[in-house]
Image (cartoon, rainbow, N blue to C red; front, side):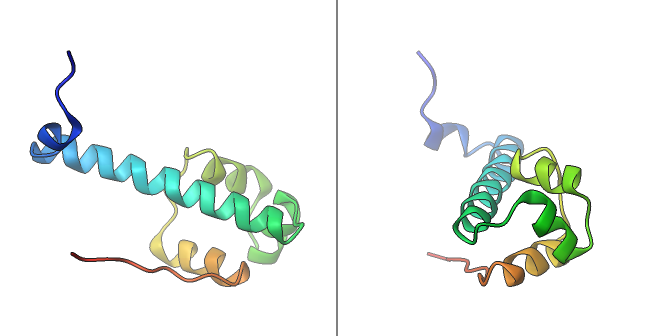
Length: 87
């Protein structure tokens, strides 16, 4: 039986990898949903940001690591902002 996630996340290296992938997946889903809601194609979105469509596709597939500045620009174009929580 697999160790529960909460226990695995106590391992710092595992937690870093897991959270890194989770953030990329969350960003990919957020950008894709928001872009579709605005009826924008990947090409239109890329052109607005002066980026390439293949790069947008990689971001939306979780295969790219955009800078925090690039993330901010993408969210701005979509009318969104980044909100973080600390508990």
